[in-house]
Length: 476
Image (cartoon, rainbow, N blue to C red):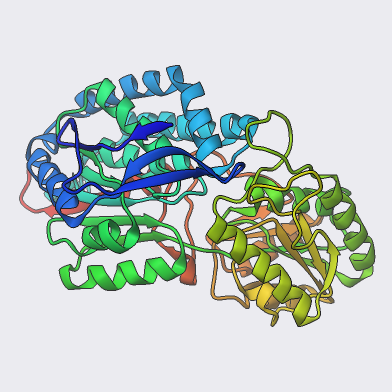
């Protein structure tokens, strides 16, 4: 049993103000593999105060000083790669190869990208050659960073590294469901030698620690990734102090498959939604298929879903693991049953455990056909390996269905007509549009329209979220 009960506050590992043990469950086995502590408002206060004091000196550090520490952290992260892989595999059910090649690699790529951004970023410059006005970028202050369980390291690095590079100090509250990788991350920060109080980690749940962070008067900015429901609560709680709030929330991505799509478009779409066991906020969970190829597309989707292996996260290979928790498992199974009740055709998968697995939070890759966009399974973020296939007749109808959602995080389209692809990409409302399965490069902005959130993470856009812009006159 791993014990990680202490919090990282003011450069030291300290015991919680009040003992509050919490078991971390391995979703492949349904058994506890680690024990952490759930923090209190008192623990959060200590961390926030440490960050507030540290900000006065950290904000004055040079670019070169920050770069040296980030380079050191980067070296440590890569050296302790295998530990990070194992932590994420056990805590959230990512198969070992996927935990390495996707989860842990994302953290490394984002860190490296922010180091390069910091090297080139000009914090001060003249407004205009003819003007005596000056522009200065300054760190926003003390940041409250609240991260989810589905991509633990990706989301932590997307927030912490640019915040550090910008000159901010912070308190991190990771998901209590998947906290072990965050503790390991804090160990790396400590080993790299960042000054005391610059980075602080307090584990806890959203109702106590998260709520205290978002409403605290000494927190200048909250950056949250998680559910839309929780995002709304955070925004309301932060309103009294008028702090900056950036939110990366839920999604219900539409994937428009035109009749002139490339041969593997449907199969690739199925693989995309099933990746990470469907626990991705920008997953293409609604596949809109043009009617002339609808029947063929359903057959291909079913065939591809049936080829996807479900197995223990502790195994290597190309397969998907369990959902993260019993709560998430029950939600997904209930929504599969809801889809059946609504009259959608269960074409593959279903609510029963996969063959050979009688324990663990495993769900079969599930395909619903004959879905319309008014069904609950087409409007709710299921966050599991479940795909709804919806027919359409015209380009305009496909765009209308895709946009008929409260979300707007990631939309997809498949066609070999380049002009049509550009035309449709301009009209669908989402923070990212993926054409013909092309992934975004590291450093591209990521975020949503509508109830998928506000602000952007990644690249220079994510970096500048942690900066204030100061205009100064009479500089020259």
